[in-house]
Length: 274
Image 1 (tube, helix red, strand yellow):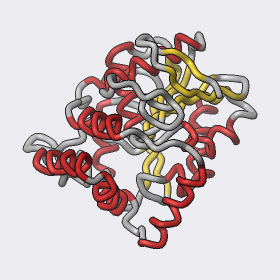
Image 2 (cartoon, rainbow, N blue to C red):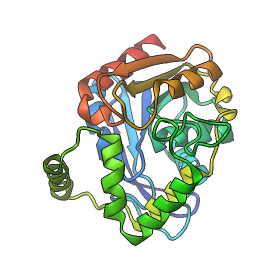
Image 3 (cartoon, rainbow, N blue to C red):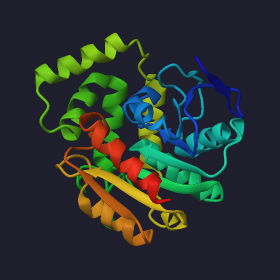
Protein backbone atom coordinates (compact mmCIF):
# COMPACT_ATOMS: atom_id res chain seq x y z
CA UNK A 1 0.00 0.00 0.00
CA UNK A 2 1.50 3.35 -1.09
CA UNK A 3 1.71 6.17 1.44
CA UNK A 4 3.08 9.70 1.32
CA UNK A 5 3.84 12.06 4.17
CA UNK A 6 2.19 15.47 4.37
CA UNK A 7 3.77 18.67 5.70
CA UNK A 8 2.33 17.86 9.17
CA UNK A 9 3.62 14.24 9.12
CA UNK A 10 0.28 12.60 8.31
CA UNK A 11 0.50 9.42 6.24
CA UNK A 12 -2.01 9.43 3.37
CA UNK A 13 -2.84 6.49 1.13
CA UNK A 14 -2.32 7.14 -2.58
CA UNK A 15 -2.67 5.39 -5.93
CA UNK A 16 -0.39 5.93 -8.93
CA UNK A 17 -0.73 3.77 -12.04
CA UNK A 18 -0.26 4.26 -15.78
CA UNK A 19 1.88 6.55 -17.91
CA UNK A 20 1.17 9.77 -19.74
CA UNK A 21 -0.43 13.05 -18.71
CA UNK A 22 -1.23 12.82 -15.00
CA UNK A 23 -4.85 13.03 -13.81
CA UNK A 24 -5.18 13.53 -10.06
CA UNK A 25 -8.54 12.37 -8.70
CA UNK A 26 -9.84 13.85 -5.43
CA UNK A 27 -12.70 12.00 -3.73
CA UNK A 28 -15.59 13.38 -1.73
CA UNK A 29 -16.82 13.44 1.85
CA UNK A 30 -16.93 9.98 3.52
CA UNK A 31 -15.36 8.29 0.48
CA UNK A 32 -11.88 7.06 -0.46
CA UNK A 33 -9.66 6.85 -3.51
CA UNK A 34 -11.16 3.45 -4.35
CA UNK A 35 -14.34 5.26 -5.42
CA UNK A 36 -12.49 6.42 -8.54
CA UNK A 37 -11.17 3.00 -9.58
CA UNK A 38 -13.97 2.61 -12.19
CA UNK A 39 -12.55 5.70 -13.89
CA UNK A 40 -8.83 5.27 -13.20
CA UNK A 41 -8.46 1.68 -14.35
CA UNK A 42 -9.81 2.23 -17.90
CA UNK A 43 -7.89 5.51 -18.26
CA UNK A 44 -4.49 4.29 -17.11
CA UNK A 45 -3.75 2.66 -20.47
CA UNK A 46 -3.20 6.18 -21.83
CA UNK A 47 -2.86 8.45 -18.77
CA UNK A 48 -1.09 8.42 -15.43
CA UNK A 49 -3.94 8.07 -12.94
CA UNK A 50 -3.32 9.28 -9.40
CA UNK A 51 -5.56 9.59 -6.36
CA UNK A 52 -5.22 9.92 -2.61
CA UNK A 53 -7.49 9.27 0.33
CA UNK A 54 -8.20 12.25 2.58
CA UNK A 55 -6.98 12.26 6.15
CA UNK A 56 -9.38 10.47 8.48
CA UNK A 57 -10.79 8.39 5.61
CA UNK A 58 -10.15 4.85 4.37
CA UNK A 59 -6.62 3.59 4.84
CA UNK A 60 -5.13 7.04 5.46
CA UNK A 61 -3.93 8.08 8.90
CA UNK A 62 -6.43 9.62 11.34
CA UNK A 63 -4.81 12.58 13.06
CA UNK A 64 -6.68 14.71 15.59
CA UNK A 65 -6.35 17.86 13.43
CA UNK A 66 -6.49 19.20 9.89
CA UNK A 67 -10.16 18.63 8.98
CA UNK A 68 -10.78 21.77 6.98
CA UNK A 69 -10.99 22.36 3.22
CA UNK A 70 -7.86 24.58 3.20
CA UNK A 71 -5.92 21.74 4.85
CA UNK A 72 -7.20 19.22 2.27
CA UNK A 73 -5.96 21.51 -0.50
CA UNK A 74 -2.56 21.62 1.19
CA UNK A 75 -2.58 17.81 1.37
CA UNK A 76 -3.25 17.80 -2.39
CA UNK A 77 -0.35 20.18 -2.93
CA UNK A 78 1.84 17.94 -0.77
CA UNK A 79 1.01 15.01 -3.06
CA UNK A 80 1.88 17.03 -6.18
CA UNK A 81 5.20 17.96 -4.56
CA UNK A 82 5.89 14.40 -3.39
CA UNK A 83 5.38 13.02 -6.91
CA UNK A 84 7.08 16.05 -8.50
CA UNK A 85 4.04 16.62 -10.72
CA UNK A 86 3.56 19.38 -13.23
CA UNK A 87 1.13 19.89 -16.12
CA UNK A 88 -1.61 17.92 -14.38
CA UNK A 89 -5.38 17.69 -14.59
CA UNK A 90 -7.23 17.66 -11.25
CA UNK A 91 -10.61 15.96 -11.13
CA UNK A 92 -12.59 16.52 -7.92
CA UNK A 93 -15.94 14.96 -7.05
CA UNK A 94 -18.20 16.69 -4.51
CA UNK A 95 -16.00 17.73 -1.57
CA UNK A 96 -13.09 16.83 -3.83
CA UNK A 97 -14.21 19.62 -6.16
CA UNK A 98 -14.27 22.02 -3.20
CA UNK A 99 -10.70 20.88 -2.52
CA UNK A 100 -9.91 21.80 -6.13
CA UNK A 101 -11.52 25.25 -5.70
CA UNK A 102 -9.45 25.82 -2.56
CA UNK A 103 -6.28 24.56 -4.25
CA UNK A 104 -6.74 27.14 -7.01
CA UNK A 105 -7.40 29.84 -4.41
CA UNK A 106 -4.16 29.02 -2.55
CA UNK A 107 -1.81 27.93 -5.32
CA UNK A 108 -3.26 29.14 -8.62
CA UNK A 109 -3.25 27.18 -11.88
CA UNK A 110 0.45 27.24 -12.74
CA UNK A 111 0.75 23.44 -12.45
CA UNK A 112 -2.61 22.70 -14.07
CA UNK A 113 -3.42 22.10 -17.72
CA UNK A 114 -7.04 21.34 -16.91
CA UNK A 115 -9.56 20.83 -14.12
CA UNK A 116 -12.80 18.88 -13.72
CA UNK A 117 -15.53 19.38 -11.11
CA UNK A 118 -18.04 16.58 -10.60
CA UNK A 119 -21.30 17.98 -9.21
CA UNK A 120 -20.37 20.54 -6.57
CA UNK A 121 -21.38 24.01 -5.47
CA UNK A 122 -18.98 26.85 -4.60
CA UNK A 123 -21.06 27.53 -1.45
CA UNK A 124 -22.86 24.78 0.46
CA UNK A 125 -25.20 26.69 2.76
CA UNK A 126 -27.94 28.85 1.23
CA UNK A 127 -28.95 32.28 2.50
CA UNK A 128 -30.64 35.46 1.31
CA UNK A 129 -27.84 36.03 -1.21
CA UNK A 130 -27.47 32.46 -2.48
CA UNK A 131 -29.91 29.77 -3.62
CA UNK A 132 -27.64 27.43 -5.58
CA UNK A 133 -26.22 25.47 -2.68
CA UNK A 134 -27.10 22.08 -1.22
CA UNK A 135 -30.54 20.49 -1.80
CA UNK A 136 -31.42 22.75 -4.73
CA UNK A 137 -31.10 25.88 -2.61
CA UNK A 138 -33.11 24.63 0.38
CA UNK A 139 -30.27 23.93 2.83
CA UNK A 140 -29.99 26.82 5.32
CA UNK A 141 -27.86 27.57 8.38
CA UNK A 142 -30.47 26.08 10.72
CA UNK A 143 -30.42 22.83 8.72
CA UNK A 144 -26.63 22.69 8.94
CA UNK A 145 -26.69 23.19 12.72
CA UNK A 146 -29.28 20.44 13.11
CA UNK A 147 -27.32 18.07 10.86
CA UNK A 148 -24.04 18.62 12.68
CA UNK A 149 -25.75 17.77 15.96
CA UNK A 150 -27.24 14.62 14.39
CA UNK A 151 -23.84 13.56 13.01
CA UNK A 152 -22.44 13.65 16.56
CA UNK A 153 -25.53 12.04 18.10
CA UNK A 154 -26.27 9.27 15.60
CA UNK A 155 -24.36 9.34 12.34
CA UNK A 156 -26.49 6.62 10.72
CA UNK A 157 -29.60 8.76 11.21
CA UNK A 158 -27.92 11.59 9.33
CA UNK A 159 -26.70 9.31 6.52
CA UNK A 160 -30.17 7.87 6.03
CA UNK A 161 -31.59 11.29 5.20
CA UNK A 162 -28.55 12.38 3.22
CA UNK A 163 -28.52 9.29 0.99
CA UNK A 164 -32.22 9.71 0.25
CA UNK A 165 -31.44 13.21 -1.03
CA UNK A 166 -28.38 12.07 -3.00
CA UNK A 167 -30.17 8.99 -4.38
CA UNK A 168 -33.90 9.79 -4.49
CA UNK A 169 -34.67 6.31 -5.83
CA UNK A 170 -33.01 4.51 -2.90
CA UNK A 171 -35.01 1.81 -1.13
CA UNK A 172 -34.32 0.07 2.19
CA UNK A 173 -33.24 -3.00 0.22
CA UNK A 174 -30.80 -1.02 -1.91
CA UNK A 175 -29.44 0.76 1.17
CA UNK A 176 -28.86 -2.63 2.81
CA UNK A 177 -27.05 -3.92 -0.27
CA UNK A 178 -24.84 -0.82 -0.43
CA UNK A 179 -23.98 -1.20 3.26
CA UNK A 180 -23.11 -4.87 2.68
CA UNK A 181 -20.82 -3.98 -0.24
CA UNK A 182 -19.08 -1.35 1.89
CA UNK A 183 -18.41 -3.85 4.66
CA UNK A 184 -17.14 -6.49 2.22
CA UNK A 185 -14.75 -4.00 0.62
CA UNK A 186 -12.63 -3.97 3.76
CA UNK A 187 -12.08 -0.21 3.44
CA UNK A 188 -12.24 1.40 6.91
CA UNK A 189 -15.03 3.98 7.25
CA UNK A 190 -14.11 7.60 7.83
CA UNK A 191 -13.67 8.69 11.43
CA UNK A 192 -16.41 10.69 13.14
CA UNK A 193 -13.94 13.53 13.67
CA UNK A 194 -13.21 13.66 9.92
CA UNK A 195 -16.89 13.47 8.99
CA UNK A 196 -18.04 16.14 11.42
CA UNK A 197 -15.02 18.38 10.91
CA UNK A 198 -15.29 18.33 7.13
CA UNK A 199 -19.08 18.74 7.09
CA UNK A 200 -18.43 21.89 9.07
CA UNK A 201 -15.48 22.66 6.81
CA UNK A 202 -17.65 22.59 3.68
CA UNK A 203 -20.28 24.78 5.32
CA UNK A 204 -17.97 27.64 6.23
CA UNK A 205 -16.18 28.19 2.90
CA UNK A 206 -17.34 30.28 -0.05
CA UNK A 207 -15.70 30.08 -3.48
CA UNK A 208 -18.21 32.12 -5.47
CA UNK A 209 -15.63 34.78 -6.30
CA UNK A 210 -12.38 32.83 -6.18
CA UNK A 211 -13.46 30.24 -8.79
CA UNK A 212 -12.82 32.99 -11.33
CA UNK A 213 -9.17 32.12 -10.72
CA UNK A 214 -9.62 28.85 -12.64
CA UNK A 215 -7.78 29.97 -15.76
CA UNK A 216 -7.08 26.52 -17.24
CA UNK A 217 -9.58 24.56 -19.36
CA UNK A 218 -12.44 23.52 -17.10
CA UNK A 219 -15.22 20.96 -17.29
CA UNK A 220 -18.22 20.26 -15.06
CA UNK A 221 -19.75 16.78 -14.96
CA UNK A 222 -23.13 16.47 -13.29
CA UNK A 223 -26.08 14.10 -13.06
CA UNK A 224 -29.21 15.42 -14.73
CA UNK A 225 -31.62 13.86 -12.22
CA UNK A 226 -32.83 15.75 -9.15
CA UNK A 227 -30.27 15.20 -6.42
CA UNK A 228 -28.04 17.50 -4.36
CA UNK A 229 -27.43 20.43 -6.74
CA UNK A 230 -29.38 22.00 -9.59
CA UNK A 231 -28.33 22.81 -13.14
CA UNK A 232 -28.39 26.46 -12.05
CA UNK A 233 -25.36 25.76 -9.84
CA UNK A 234 -23.34 24.52 -12.80
CA UNK A 235 -24.50 27.45 -14.92
CA UNK A 236 -23.38 29.90 -12.23
CA UNK A 237 -19.90 28.38 -12.15
CA UNK A 238 -19.73 28.42 -15.95
CA UNK A 239 -20.50 32.16 -15.94
CA UNK A 240 -17.62 32.73 -13.53
CA UNK A 241 -15.20 30.50 -15.47
CA UNK A 242 -15.42 31.40 -19.18
CA UNK A 243 -15.15 28.47 -21.57
CA UNK A 244 -16.48 25.94 -19.07
CA UNK A 245 -17.95 22.83 -20.67
CA UNK A 246 -20.90 21.23 -18.84
CA UNK A 247 -21.47 17.51 -19.43
CA UNK A 248 -24.70 15.99 -18.15
CA UNK A 249 -24.90 12.30 -17.28
CA UNK A 250 -28.17 10.43 -16.88
CA UNK A 251 -27.82 10.02 -13.14
CA UNK A 252 -27.54 11.81 -9.80
CA UNK A 253 -24.76 13.21 -7.63
CA UNK A 254 -23.48 9.62 -7.58
CA UNK A 255 -23.06 9.41 -11.36
CA UNK A 256 -19.41 8.18 -11.17
CA UNK A 257 -20.79 5.04 -9.49
CA UNK A 258 -24.14 4.87 -11.31
CA UNK A 259 -22.72 5.46 -14.79
CA UNK A 260 -18.97 4.82 -14.54
CA UNK A 261 -18.42 4.31 -18.28
CA UNK A 262 -20.17 7.57 -19.20
CA UNK A 263 -18.20 9.57 -16.62
CA UNK A 264 -14.97 7.92 -17.79
CA UNK A 265 -15.78 8.86 -21.39
CA UNK A 266 -16.47 12.46 -20.38
CA UNK A 267 -13.05 12.62 -18.69
CA UNK A 268 -11.37 10.95 -21.66
CA UNK A 269 -12.98 13.40 -24.09
CA UNK A 270 -11.83 16.34 -21.96
CA UNK A 271 -8.27 15.01 -21.87
CA UNK A 272 -8.22 14.58 -25.63
CA UNK A 273 -9.33 18.19 -26.07
CA UNK A 274 -6.33 19.62 -24.21
